[in-house]
Length: 305
Length: 271
Image 1 (cartoon, one colour):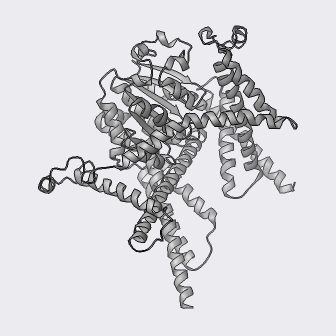
Image 2: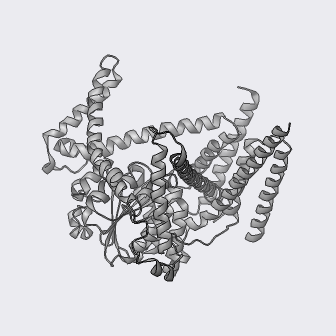
Image 3: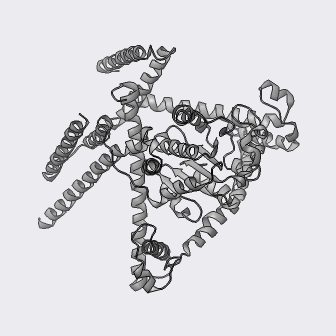
């Protein structure tokens, strides 16, 4: 059924694109709303009839994966959810995948957020996606959420030397000095790895500037696609690796499944979203080709006249 | 308003109520608050469709969704600012009485007279609302800009300037160069191989060098200098292209998120 749906969708989209090319070559105008309709179809069809593609982790993603994979069991990893609901479809899949990977390897996780909206998303992620796969994990022993604190870069400026000064308690008002995870953790410098997931300000870039570089702490980033090109100059000198947009999430999920096959049964939204991504990109490229064909044909005709 | 507008509004309202009833009905066995949950999901779907309707043409439904979003965002951030900054960060350091009033744990060890300075600066910032005393708000603003610039200067200088220059000094033959014979006898075409590393390092070196030449305007861009400048433009264009590609990917991801919500949470046609 899914295959038939995919084939019908592809025929519809392809047929439509050819019709548009013919119309354009006949110098008939194409309404911009037709383009929107095509993008909608290209995105909706693979959601209705799932299309999956094989992903292979690129070096920039694999570096983050290998870092977490090779940390000794019991290492402490800080995951910062620096995003809001608008960014969530892009970065939530990578946040979930990384959390699962850390739990699978037996690392202790400190969750936090530099965004007020991140705390609610963090709680939702933990209860709906991450913890159901790890019922044995215990709050305050295997993981802790210290939540959100206002202050943007100011927060980072403090926790680089003293976490408890900024976060005296966790989200449930449990004093940090009574939480076993913090027995050997005084500041960010004592952490084994920091992963910031976001795309705005404060976010991954601020973690590099205010914690990673001055504290010499390994930092990895998972960012919204729009921000990814701005992070590349920091790789590999100042950051361990980059997960850029949903493609980065899909690559991470595929690597996670390859190394830990039990995750194949879990939800992999990153991989799922690559179907609509691919088809939408093909349609956009087709429109670019159509536009160029029409432009150069028109220019040649003008020269002849 | 035209008669057709009224008719359209009535149809949309009827569809909204119908969707709400159906959604609440489908949720009735799953949750206790099925009426509220049904309303929230239907309203979310209605707002999503209202925003997307702008792609067809500007219309009152889009305007309603836009204004609601701006209003709710402003209110949300104001409340968050008050409760997370003033109540959680400031009040526990100022007084026991206020801490117990707002039910936040006091931090007696952190009591400090200097925390009154941000209170005063905050009040001065609000003077912007006064028609005559508006100029006073420039003082706290100057303080904010000055401290931010001072705090960030060192960080940016280290991470975005010195370290970036250091990152550009890459070994053009790779870090494991042991002679040309060794290179060809151990030729590795993988992404982490020496050949790819060498190529990547050359791209960084030439990209930065030619990009800088493009922005050097004290000499006419002619001959070899002009050719390097042209390479610089290509490097810039490729960078902008990559940024654009990533931006498209980001926007499509958001659309996927919204369509998934409509199909899964609202219409329940996918699992």
